Amino acid sequence: MALILSLDTSTTVCSVALAENGQSVGKEILYAEQSHSTHLTLLIEQVLSGVSKKMSDLDAVAVSEGPGSYTGLRIGVSTAKGLCYTLGIPLIAVSTLKAMALSVSNEQNEPALFVPMIDARRMEVYSATYNNQLELIDKVRPVILDGDSFKETLATHKVFFFGNGSDKFSDVINNGNAIFVKDVVPDAWAIGELANDMFSKEDFVDVAYFEPNYLKEYQATKPKKLL
Image (cartoon, rainbow, N blue to C red; front, side, top):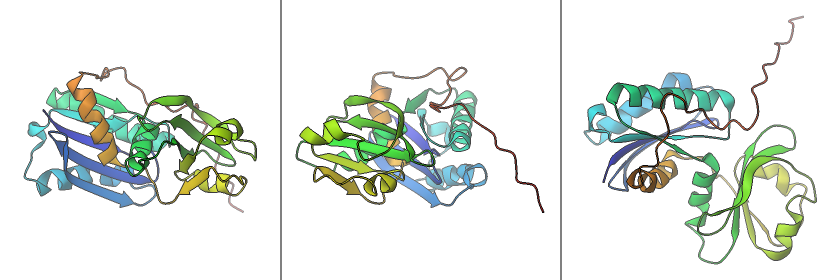
């Protein structure tokens, strides 16, 4: 088994978790925008020191691969790569959306589908559809939401929608099979839980060449001129 440090910086929430032999032993989470670059390493230190572990004790680092915030993902992946290079340990990349689906599916016993949604501005979200076994039913993709979105799926399945992009979908959909779960955010503990199984299968990514799944190319915007 392994001691795995997991990081999630895919949204405005920054979280770090530590799992030993598949069991969570520590976690820190910070709900603050634009804090990842200054607080991520501090959170890592706090998690490790809280259970009397050192960087050299780590067997792998797992990171949220996206989709999500371009800047947030870049910070998380860069930090994870740096640790892996320095310590000579493998890097595990876990889908942000699958980890979110794990958080909600763990609480459900009846057959259903799970649709995490990460806000991508305006009426667009990054989304995917998973079943109870976390098998991918509909691929990870950008979706522009309207009243007909997921119409065919909702006609035959109970579907749980969650994430910071789901609120705007709840405003345009009226279907009894649509269930909205509040306050679900990407969380490093779920990244770590999925990473433990991937570690046992040696499902690693190339530290040198791995890039986050941005889904879209980054578009810089010009600052507004001061009057």
